Image (tube, rainbow, N blue to C red; front, side, top):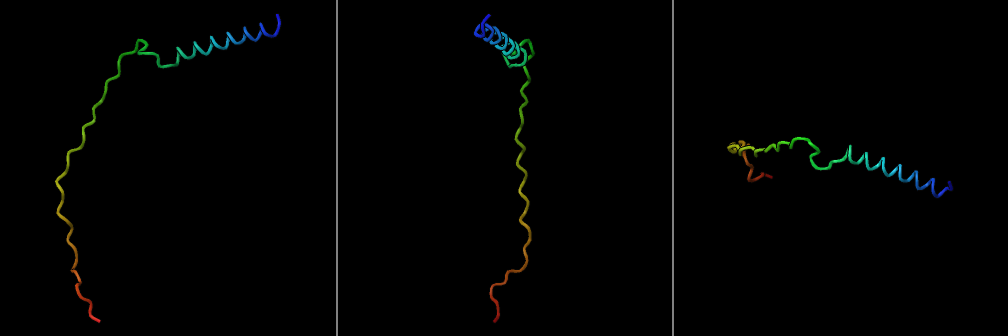
Length: 64
């Protein structure tokens, strides 16, 4: 066997391992698993706006 034949053999083995790993660990369809239930998230209801906070006195003129 020359080096080209050995490289071809090792390349085939590596490709087969990669394909098997992709099938085992990859997301190919449902794979016999039941479908996941989709959870719907409802938006929170708008709260009644609170009255504005009471402010202190407003100084309109500053004596000099």
